[in-house]
Length: 140
Image (cartoon, rainbow, N blue to C red; front, top):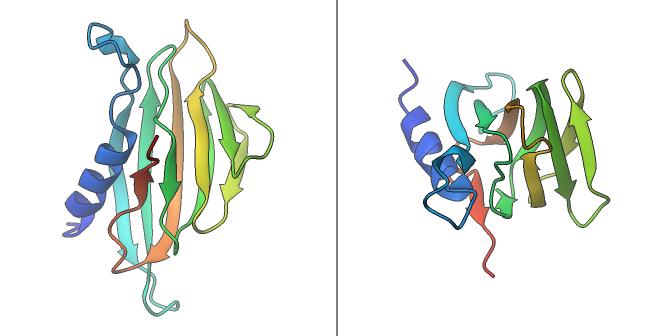
């Protein structure tokens, strides 16, 4: 149904990866699930890509950078997510709250704010159709 979605999904999963250095902590992995991809007909060269990110209690995404073309809108579906973008203040967003990230944003913190309750967010990307790497891990 969405022929390029697997390419986007692979890029996102590689960028988000495993959230905890201890491989024995399998519950510390976030799960990224592709939900939607569509070329935007009235924005030539742009696509809308949506992924759902499930965070186990205490899980976090590694620091990453978003594609230079990607405007990102994030909406917390459940739980609480701590986020920090472009060196701004870290903030905890609760279910029903949202934030946006400009193209090329550096996302240094993205994690479940709770060690007891799972959290879930929806990430909506408006991105150049040919830009398949939505996120890239930051080198340390």
